[in-house]
Image 1: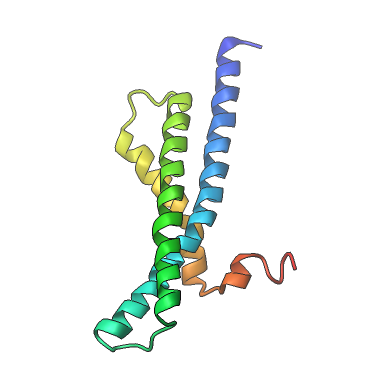
Image 2: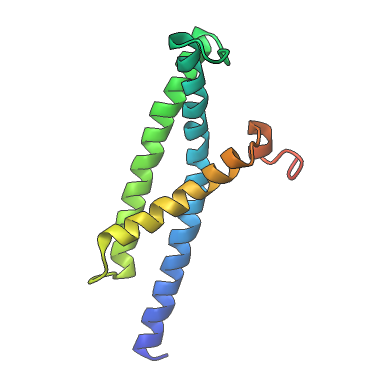
Length: 131
C-alpha cells in the first residue's frame, strides 16, 4: 500500500469517527438542550405569566440541573474530542472557524430533529422503534 493511500485511509477513518462521535454526542446533548427549552417555559410562566408552567419548583430545579450539569459535561467532552480529532485529521491551512461551524451543525442536528419534529422523550429514546 502506498504511503498516500494509507494516509488517505487513516484520514477517512478519522473523519467517519468524527462524524459518528459528534452525532452520538449531539443525541446525548439533545436531552439537556430540550430541558433548557422546557425550563424557559417555566421562567416565562413565573416571570411574565404568558404560558402555563410545565412543572413546579422542585421539578424546575431538576430541569435546570440537567440542563447546566449535563450540558456542561457533554459540551466539554465534545470540545476535547473534536480538538483531538481535528489534530488527527491534519487540517493545517484550513480555517479553524469552518471546522467548528461544521462541528456545531453536526452536534445540533439531533436536537433540531427532535425539537422541530416535536418528539416526546419516549420517542427520543426509541419508543416504537426499540420498545
